[in-house]
Image 1 (tube, rainbow, N blue to C red):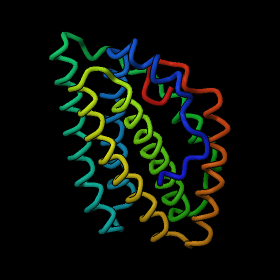
Image 2 (cartoon, rainbow, N blue to C red):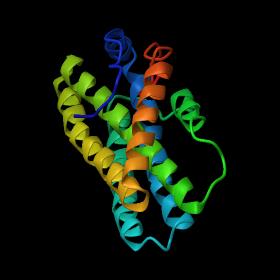
Image 3 (cartoon, helix red, strand yellow):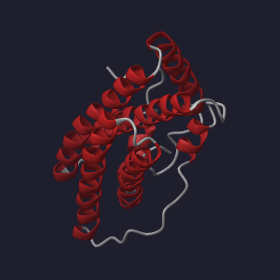
Length: 193
């Protein structure tokens, strides 16, 4: 369903289970960054009314997820801690060349956002299946559904605002690239690490 070409190394779930505080902190920041991405798309592309409407709802939803993750941290006696660079996202952003038309830049941003959501969805599925904490397991199962919806929404908008054939080729190329960079990930106690 997600189209990912390389599944997460199963050992990542073991790392995550042993470092749930780090996972929750990183997850909180991922939700905050997702809301920021939605707001950035609104600010940068206000002429795309349908996108603005969808990103307004997404920003609200992602901040709601942030609030839920933050509450999980507080319930467990954890603190937010400091944000860490998301090396996975940094690597993804290197794929597309800088420049090009506004429409091309928009398509690239939408494809990257869609892939981040797809990988997050896959990671949440793993957490929902592997965590022994039933409450957290259900929490991640519920979030997994949202992430899948976000992934398909971003892909739909990329196809709407770009040439469908070209967008689909870029998507496949991005998926291939992501599979290669994933070979160096799944070793850290973070959502994408």
